[in-house]
Every structure is written in C-alpha cells, then in structure tokens.
Image 1 (tube, helix red, strand yellow):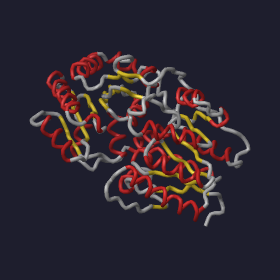
Image 2 (cartoon, one colour; image 1 turned 180 degrees about the vertical axis):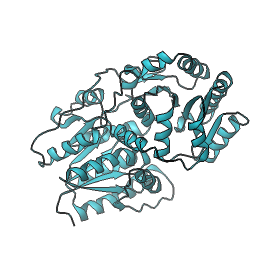
Image 3 (tube, helix red, strand yellow; image 1 turned 135 degrees about the horizontal axis):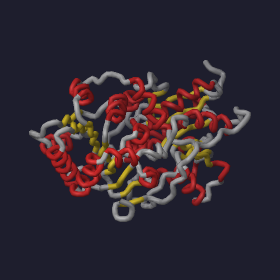
Image 4 (tube, one colour; image 1 turned 90 degrees about the horizontal axis):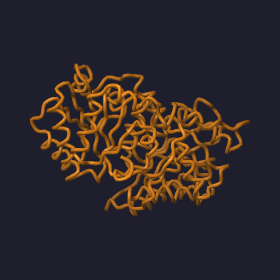
Length: 398
C-alpha cells in the first residue's frame, strides 16, 4: 500500500467523473499524493463508463440504496457511506467537483471529519437559487465549507472574492473538462455506432444538437426540434447528430419530432469519447449542456446555447457562444448566420477558450500539494481572457 497521503476524488455523475479524471492522472504522474477515485453511488454505472474513456476505474464504489429517489434520501445515504469511508481511510484532503448532490454530500462529510475540502470548478453563480435548482444552492453551500477553491475562470474567482472568501484560498486553475476533451478527442477512437462514422465521413457540415436538461423537456424540446427541421430543409449540406436523453418519454418525443426527416441521426446517450470526437468534427453545436459550452471553443466550434439563462457567461463575453433559448425563430436566425458566413463562424472562436488551456489538472495537482505542504512552491494561475459580467439571460445578453 502506498505511503503517500491519500486524496479522495468524489464523483457521482458522469460530468464529475470526466472533470476529475484528468486530476487523478496528474496526481499519479506527480507522485506527491495517492489519488483515490470514489464513485459515490449517485450514478455508479455512468461514472464507471465515463472513467473508461481515460483508462481509469473507480478505486472505491459506494453502495447507495434508493427507494423513493428523493434528494434527501440520496443525500443522507451518501453522507453515511462517505463518513464511514473517511473514518477508515483518513484522507489528507477530499476533492469535490461542481454542484451536484454528491458534491454537497462529499463536502459535508469531509468537513465534519475536519478533512480539508477542495472545490473544483468553484465560483460559478447564476444569482438565482431557483435556477439551476438545486445546483445553485449546492455550490454556494460548498463554498462555505471549502479550504481551497479552484476557480475555472477569473470571473468565477471574482464571484468568490465578492462573497468574502479569502484570496489566499482562491486559485484560478482553468476547467479540467478542457484537459479531458482534448485528451480524449485526440485519440479519435472508433464509434460503436456505424451511423456516426458515416455522419463524420459524409460530405457537408456536421451539426451536433443536445437538449438534455429537464427544463428543455416538453414544449421547449418541440421548439428545438422544429428549428432542426427548418435548418435541414434550408441547408442540404448539413448532417445533424442528436444524442437523446435516455428518458423513454423524451426519446419518443425526439423520434416523433424528427420522424421522416433526412440527414438526422438520433442516438442513445453517447460515451464521452464518442461525444468528444463528434464535437471535434462539428461545424456548429446547439446545446443546453454546460460541459459542451466549455469544450466547444477548444475545437473552434461556436455554440448556440438552448437556455434562457446561463452561468457560463465567459463564453458569451468571449464571443464563442450565443444564448438563444428555445425560440425556434431565434435558433434558426442565429444558426443561419453562422452557416451562411464562414468568416463570422471563425471570428466567434478566434479568441480561444476562456475556460481552459489543457493544463488545469496539472495546476490543480500543484495547488492541492501546496495546500498540504507537499510542494516547495505555489502554481501559477491560468492566463485569462479576463472577461467580466454576471449570469446572462436571453433578455439581457443575447
């Protein structure tokens, strides 16, 4: 067994696993701590599948029994499991990511054991406790417990400083999702679905569409699908790939909305390596995904954001994304501008990616080691595009 101090990386969802995987790799490479990947039990299968893209497996898998599926049930079960784990393994630090129920449970369990909490992707704020719900509350609460706040951008760091978090505890690391997507996309792994190979190889332009957030279901999704149909009719050279949400009702809605429409490939939820490869080959992405908003600029792909409000405003200010909501006329208008004008498309992403440069995991490892007294120096923060602003809505920032 390693004599190095353990640092537990707690992942309960696919995005958490994706963003923590590069940190585990960086920690193993540096050799100052032993990273322990913990699957919290929230979505254990999806965590394991996400880690496979990095040739990683969970070191610990917690067993959480769910009967009602409620947030209180999940929260209490995970805290009990994590508390027992921390009591047994006594980690030197616990790293939580983002704003999920797992994030809050991991932070609280560690705090109660007097274990330093490291919050990866700290400082995102919408300013509205109801949107996104409950994520906005989760990340604010974790902000009260963390010893080290690893902000992805200068704006996120400013949010923390405005909340009176000591500057010595805030570090701009960049977003590790950029590290993740660049590493995975570079491998160009084959798709399991031959239809995707054909879509990438086909002449013309690839448009990736994702609409997975719960607030997109129902009428908003119908509006998005209507916009997709219009774009297909107007542009005979585009091919659309739309990974559907696994919910059977949502999948049925997607299938019905695109029935008989040519040059559209509807798939099951895709493994991370497949999604990264698609994104790297896309001309344009229409998405309500926070992760894709962060990843797309690294491939020079502009994003039209299918949400009414987003806390990832750096891409809006940098120009690499536009907020369009689910208004089909606005979606079509903005998509047509980019499909009609190659120079405009290239201009949108010319400034690079405001969320990261591919070295966030290395900075994170260094910052954690410095916090634990295991590094002789402190890391340099990520160079920033220095965008400013608060959460932007379609009414104020589009």
